[in-house]
Length: 51
Image (cartoon, rainbow, N blue to C red):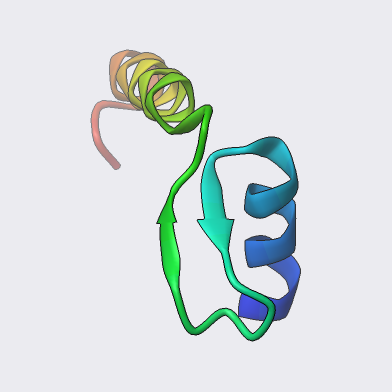
């Protein structure tokens, strides 16, 4: 699963990794990604009530 998601997050700038994924840190667009994820969570909560 990590082999699928980590390269995608790295390519979007949400995280930065080294070649073997031994180090993972926030990327250039980390804050924007978190804001988007929180907004999606809020909408989901409004529609589904935290199921």
